[in-house]
Length: 247
Image (cartoon, rainbow, N blue to C red):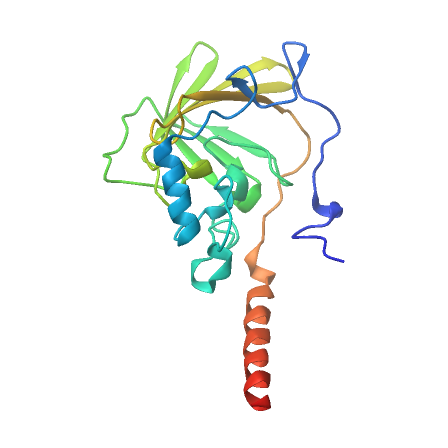
């Protein structure tokens, strides 16, 4: 029986709805009010169609409505998440979204930086406090994040993305603003606003809580014991030889 990439043992379904201001939320998105991602621009739809015709991305598992051949069909263009080089589903962000499992975060503060360590694929975001963005010629998978304080809220502004880590088909010019606010002793409210006029018809905002936990963050050892790719290729070569021998 085909169970997909994971069976239920691996899936972190959670045990309760998350609540903000006493309200149980069914959607992370709060703006637009309907809880839905805004429509793609014509330019973004055209990009998606071009990628469907000839996929070239390293992050196609994030593209909405993707059909046809993907980077999974070429061993030389496996997506970053599948190769365990970057967490899939934007787990490390920005924006940071919950995924199937390993959703813990560890935040470490120093005088000049804030480090956000993500359990998934041990991605580490370094937020430079009270700094200026790097030149636009310098691009990074997780973008260039600079931080500042607005009262008790940490505000993180991120630009300088690459075209290999486009979130939901966004361009490298996507701009993300995140806000981290301690709302009580046991919960941190995480809010993000995404703006990319070349991709969506309007900016949009989401939020959810990061609860305090006593659970430990474990090493995410992914490809170290992954024999699947080698075995897939060996099987393909074996099938080719068997087909040749029958001729």
